[in-house]
Length: 282
Image 1 (spheres, rainbow, N blue to C red):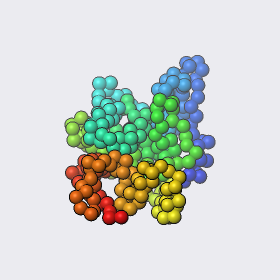
Image 2: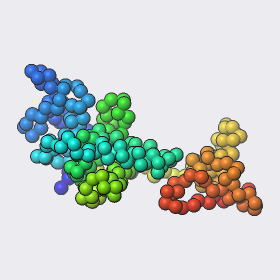
Image 3: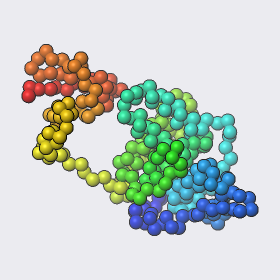
Image 4: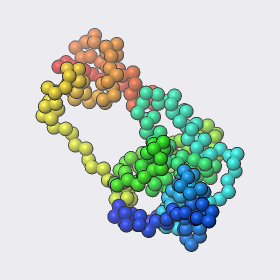
């Protein structure tokens, strides 16, 4: 059974994490876990930090015990997790073109590739997915070009973490559907449940309340005429901000007192839904 942690216990436990250190005679990075030294590669190299982060993530998921199969030999010719992530990204660029979902997928793939990019996809397992989840809570999904992910001062929200893991599951489900990897892997990943309220170190998001009407109207004199019109349209119709921004005259049916707007792109477009927004009369 997984140990339930709170932000307070995790911050305290941080001081007791196995230390990344230098083995001077061999100029290698090494970490001691469960009484055994594990060499990580050249000291302060990206590869050594990646292996260290992976080991710590699996050590935490294992209740501060490293599974026996965490460091096993792999087939260099096998399809890797990074291969699956890259193929899924290419598909997503076509399917979600112009959608904010692309950014969400990019963020979800970062910790996946950082921790397990070189692992054969067939060896990816629910335990490894949970290790990514623990890592994401405190490290998020920073741009790899900016260096090794740093521990955050505050954990990510539970909803954000669940969304990341859900997108990773969908990536493996797609890969199984395309026969890029065994279907058993994707089926096993579905067993990993969403984090529940109060059962993890993830931050519980606050309920977002509606903005008072008077605050909306108070902004209008301080913005341009065009922005003021966009704010009012969004307020009265309930449109998403992205739908207001892309609205064109050609997208409006103005043949009646109540105009109808059909956005060219919208959130459920890929499901075959057609969205109609009624505007007016004022």
